[in-house]
Image 1 (cartoon, rainbow, N blue to C red):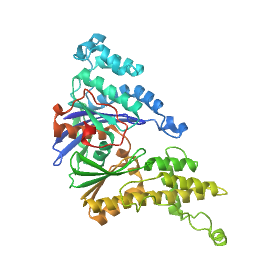
Image 2: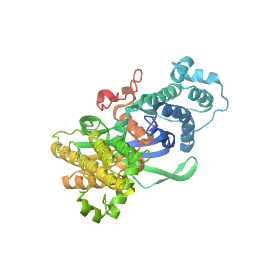
Image 3: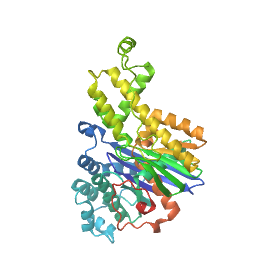
Length: 430
């Protein structure tokens, strides 16, 4: 089964093509035929965060070139002998040309590229197109969704709407295999191969990113229940805001972690021993918000505010002080995430912990969660660092599992919408 994945929920434009075989929960093998991603971080740095309309514009510019690159990499880019605009009309069948122009009418650059390139291409051997429907930035989401709808209409193949957060769950379950030696693109080459990990239920998934901090219970495949979520800032958002307070560049997560690691390695303190002795200054201590709240929710706005007040009181914000604040902030956040997840595993008797999302790349968090899962007797699966950020591979994999489990008849694409909310439930996935 060959699936095309499209991801445009935020500031990464990504397209992936995979081939899968097997049954979910038993043996589910995945060959990555193409996996393309363009990050917009350098463009958004001056804003200190993602600027939605800029992200939308870049998606519109990048989607078609990325698709052509992915089709070429997978060996599926086959050109027709002749092409004309009438071929578009012929391929649309139930969609008239005006419907295509309606779908991509707000993306004139993408529409122009689409009308120029797609008629030249033979229909690739794809079973379905999986596309992120949300949550995310709606202007960015709609660009990917409408592009996917147009391809689905032209090629007459099913469209599978995928919840972005579910994609992060499946990213955590990708287990790398030895590269396959195969006749790929008519050449003997290596194809990256993965399999979907076999897991024991119940499962707890900790999803941590710039927009989300969630604890999700899975009693079976595709059966999701949110047990806890952030009441204000997501953990990745808190990293970015604290980095801004400390004068560090965007994105803040890696900057904070690098400083924190420096502080740990050098055993830095906010002041040297002599000054500490004179002033009796204690080591910086930040709150652990909601760590004993009795529920599974999170709150990271308060710790960000605590850092802000601390910095305002300091006579000088030196590099050493920045490093010490970064270390204490990262320690506090990781402690909260680890202890909340521990209690969730204990109270649900979970057998498996899955960790996904951009903040899953944090080395300290990976270490502490792995140690905690071992203490609780739970298996742990954490997404590879390269798969932690937003990518189309996870969307394609999630789409392939839905297709394999439910069949193409289960996808009604006539009225699905981009969604910006936090819900992960079956009603939101279809």
